[in-house]
Image (cartoon, rainbow, N blue to C red; front, top):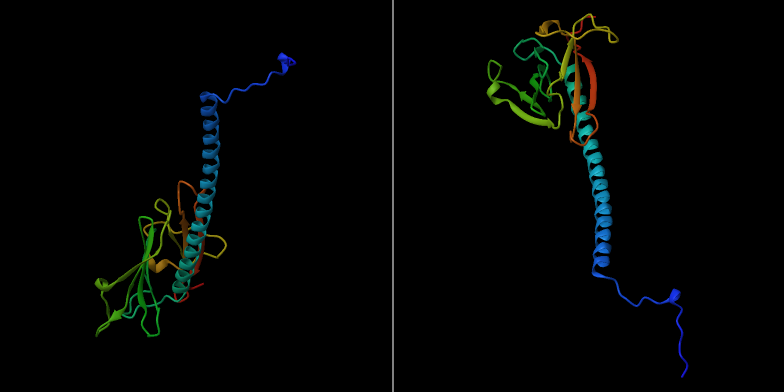
Amino acid sequence: MSNQIQNPKFKTDTRGMSIIEILVAIGIFLIVSAGTMEIFIWGFRGRDVVWEQLSTQNEGRKVVQDFVNQLRRAGQSATGGYGLESAGAQEVVFYSNLDADSFRERIRYFLVSTTLKVGIVKATGTPLAYNLGSETVTDIVHDVANTTSSLFYYYDEDYTGATGTPMSAPIDPALVRVIGINLLLEEKPNVAPVPFAIETKAAIRNLKTN
């Protein structure tokens, strides 16, 4: 029988993986898996934030357009009151016809925390009157970021449409001819980069003198 001679340089290691090597391999696998999962989670979160922001922006655009349309039709109330009742930084009250009857409703836009609401009061009774206790209030847009900045601002008859400084508080409604709205929306303040701004101005046609 011939003797087999092994070269020490090419000696085959027949040992299996040690427990330490197995634990190290498992640890590396878990770290890589956790990192991959985190990437997927943040990807889904980012996608959700984008869709939520788009939904909020579309909601805000509709609200601003409705506000402008109503404001342009504003005029004397059904009881003979002035078309613009009050003008504040976070609340505005005016009269405009929302339905098929011939009487204007009392419309109040106002901000409560981060929710913009609208309150509607119809003129009823004989003689006609606006019963504020019957006001119907609806939440129209959430995630409003105007808690420290003005939502509404006002211009007098000197405003040309290109230049002009907003009126300072307290504001006399009888002097207002143009109302601006600057709606700031922020779905998730801790995630979204900056608030989305929707800004426009509208002249109250029945009050405009220039």
